[in-house]
Image 1 (cartoon, rainbow, N blue to C red):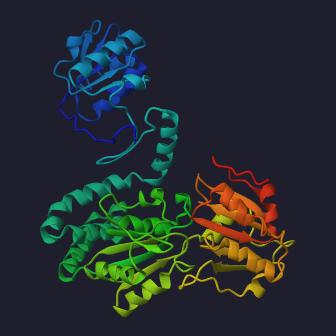
Image 2 (cartoon, helix red, strand yellow):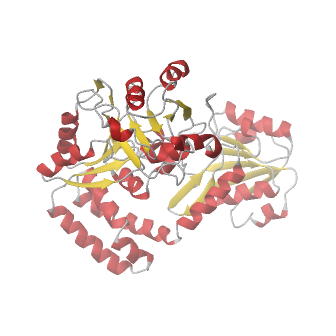
Image 3 (cartoon, rainbow, N blue to C red):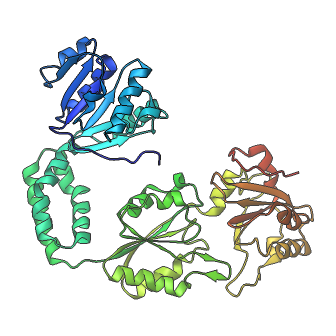
Length: 467
């Protein structure tokens, strides 16, 4: 993060703008919306600036900039075409510890102007850190279309009742849940329709109900997908952002964790082969205890929670204790990694079925129906099979698979660090050692692997030599 996003109150605060052309006029108009007291220093004043003199009560000083002009200012903007002047303005502001923006000169700025979506008092600001202002404006346009102007009315409505709700609901967590329900339900729709009288009645009724009801926790069992944050479902994102606690495993990417509420507690319960930070039974009890304490818990699991994710074991505990829960499916690693590797799991010319298996069982052994897995015209996807790869390849060959049968290993699939290694059952165990492949990985066995080179669409920074 190159710039820390911050909203600053400028009402009745002295601000200086150096320059009086069209670009300066846009900055003056923006500052004017905040109620700032604006002084403009310039040798010549453009028509746009002159037209705002009386409406914004501008103080116009027709002269060259002097370092003394920044004295007492709360904020400084330089919008001239002269590099030397801009440098002097920036240096003068820096000496006096005053935030300064020099238009189109990010190297001289201590702050930058974001692209703004104004639904006052609701404000959204988008910044590219000065790298691409045009991109920031494009994103602003997208957000503008998603946030109707009536959200301004909704924010004012919430402001009117903030004191009453705070007085009635003392516990911050319960108060947050109340507001989430009000601002995403019928109350919001009534305000959008400009029926504030009925909205007030519904809110007060909801407030009375909230005071009578104890806080009730819930667990959201969320499939976080194979790694790419863009593959998270809308429902998963919504529940993740309202959770009080996030319980996550090692396969959940940092980008997905960033989507959780900033103030949500995060608890890591990741497991690796023979190295469990928390036994599964303890995770089950943790989820139950958090919910029983009134927390809304997001249990984030890589891939899909019901495909080798032990989600069934976790909700069994919740059901036994009468705890409410929701299950949100995720894109399983098989579908995500295969797609990003350009390997169709089924194909009319190669595979008419697909089987998912795990590479190790509860006792650490590999005890699969090898004869069935070695049958032709199918794709086998093996989860958690890297450690037992040599035994897997040997067993498939012994049960009828050709030694040159195609196999692929996808490491960190769907992420920028994705690597795909293809080979045969015979040579893959040795190649894995040479290429230093490490978990998390997914193994795909079948002639569909031969399509990888042709259909490989996802380009990453870490290609592998598959020759």
